Image 1 (cartoon, rainbow, N blue to C red):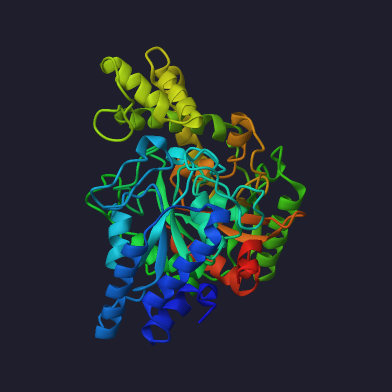
Image 2 (tube, rainbow, N blue to C red):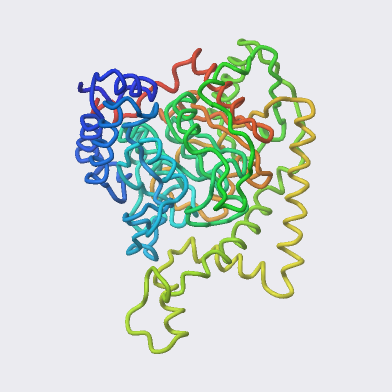
Length: 492
């Protein structure tokens, strides 16, 4: 079959189980596409053909024996922030260019246990710090819809591999929008789960109280299949919550859109910099949901102006602490011929980290320093609680909250936005991480340049099933999620 990459996860599962094609055939199909197309997209940092084919053969044997899981044999790409045993795990940084992980992240362990096939590790902004995937040590990943544009970030590689049909789905991480924004830029569905729903064990840390792993795929249904694999409590992660996990696939029709109360924050639609065509597509999607029976309710979220400054104090502070371990001594990059220990520290870190990472380490170290800790970091944590309370008050009257996922569509590669401009591009996503809430991006059309636009739906705690169900039903009534990026169409 020549169009295996056009099949949904459900169709791939059925095809494998019914013997229409083998996992080896499917895996080889994707490896050939990667070899043919990825030099243009630059989404993969490391391709693992030997590992993939051995896992595919094991899946085929399990399917033949009748003891395979539903997803056995389906290929998957991992963001290069998930530790993968025996495979380079770089976090997009020179600092970890030589790091071969001795163990698997829990998400990787669960994927292997489900029989999923690892195609490789995909590109990202260095240490997940960025919104364009241009800060990677390995160069910029390109947007499959238009190779002159960025795919978003930091999970830009994860978005690009799916949009270019180089993997059926991918794992991503979201610290301040890093699943939802690239999903928006690349026309995909991407879910950021409730903090604590998916284990962080083995994820290279950026900001520990904000990071959360989640699925990126074409549709809500495809995301639900991956959530069934990766969600759940993990004793190895002290921030993982021991709470029963839903069957996200079975629950895709559990929430009725009819009578659903969708909150529309008026402050979100008056943000400076919200592009007219993004606003128009989002409003059209809300009208569609209204036609399907949803009720649109205006709500107040009064802390919008605090989102960006609060996040960019807390996240860099945690990054400063987490990245202090990269000292040139234990693992990772080490400078040549250090004259003494201080020289080893200074040059290893100066040479190993990129500009954006250094900028955030400096901001975070300053915010945590004596004399400034109370004035900045502690105050930001207090404001964080107010942001959370703002959302909880809104959820007293509505089921979900709607917003754009990003104020614009994808930026041009090399646009050289200032750090402030880049940070303001995350205005719609940051607060979800600060509050620990779940949120999902759904593609809802194209802008005037034929680039995708995303709708974000924010849910109350543990409402992943509800969010997936709403988007699934929306996607039953629209075809935006089936539209293909230019490079995928050219290589159909």
